[in-house]
View (tube, rainbow, N blue to C red):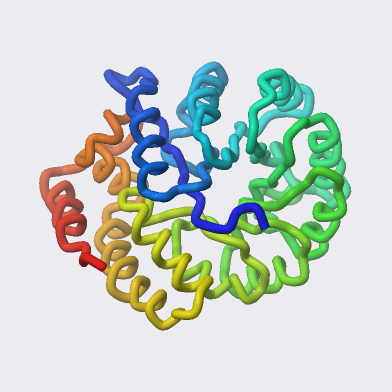
Length: 293
């Protein structure tokens, strides 16, 4: 198991609408100082999809300076274009680096998805993780990665794991069990990880820990050790009330404003939401009421 503690998503920061990396550098240093071992850029992170491909390269280049494990996300691109981005990363020869790849088309068959990831995995010098958010189906509706498809992906050389984004806990528990894969639970939730770890989830994408890494690191240590009862108390007394305040406003908007208040993120890029004063006070209050453990 490589990802044996929480994974921290890195949101891009903007000043006057332009990407700025000083805040990103400061945030990475902050995470490392507070125990983070794994970081990730991803199309699932706030405002990543507002970046140009050149800006994605700039952000990822900064994140590659992190001394721990780096999961480098790339946008949804055609096979030739994603190989072009992988080629640039191959040339850098970065240590402790993994690539997070999204299937870029509508779903028609499992073999279509498997062939895409097989070609990408063969081309990459770095182990590959799949971003398994539901995709649109070619004949209408959405497709969520099934256990059969994930098992086929697990048989690909150099395919290491997935960022799990199943539509429900029941679907997730059925789809990820008995797989030889690293499975990073998305949603920023200790509670979701608690539910899915018995079925094979490896770790989780940080939520409250994005602002205060201590909580997520402490939870994972307790859960992995001999005190799951105390780990559950962090879910009940820290995560649940914190999420209740943030989710009523919107997680990404709240998280970004919270990081701004901590001096770890500058600003946003249009068309992102502008919070009202009441929402800002709610976020500040949620932060100030976090218990000391």
